[in-house]
Length: 76
Image (cartoon, rainbow, N blue to C red; front, top):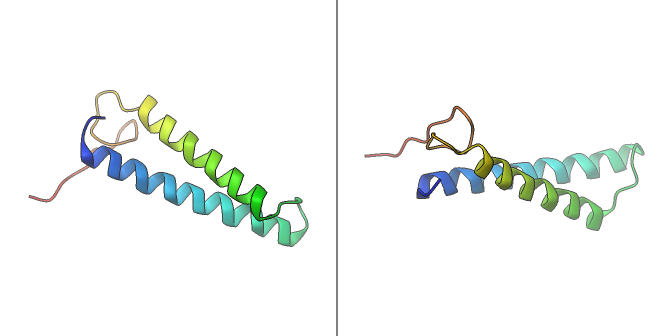
């Protein structure tokens, strides 16, 4: 958890999660399944990104990557 590779992977994962939740919430709004606007979509995405970082930190014991079984490899 104290490596730069871990935090890069965690940042990438949280940005992807943010984007997925934002697109998903706005897409569901377009279909009329939920009532979400940009502010709500951004808030949902930010909340999901924070949860992603917390999950990565919580599952970081023993591995180099942000997941339970992941290993981040660096170029030599």
